[in-house]
Image 1: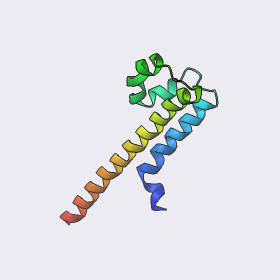
Image 2: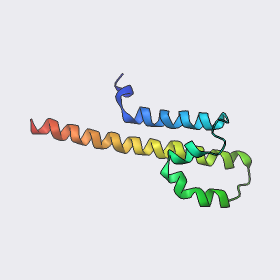
Image 3: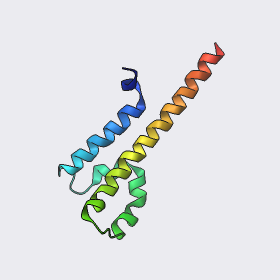
Image 4: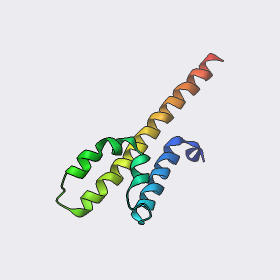
Length: 92
């Protein structure tokens, strides 16, 4: 149950929900996908200019970047939280 209390569970889940919502066709202009991840906004010129060999790879790259960037951000946030908790426990 401790895993559910971690940011590293909720942010990737949030990212996965956004990716599934986009894949279902409800976000046909990719607005939610790109505005929920600054990395994709920054890489948007490269992603639209680059031609991929395979259509699957072309569609999978933004979803993979979205998921893994949120996953890495959540691990960083959990690490910072654990630093503050250990610092707080050490002061008492």
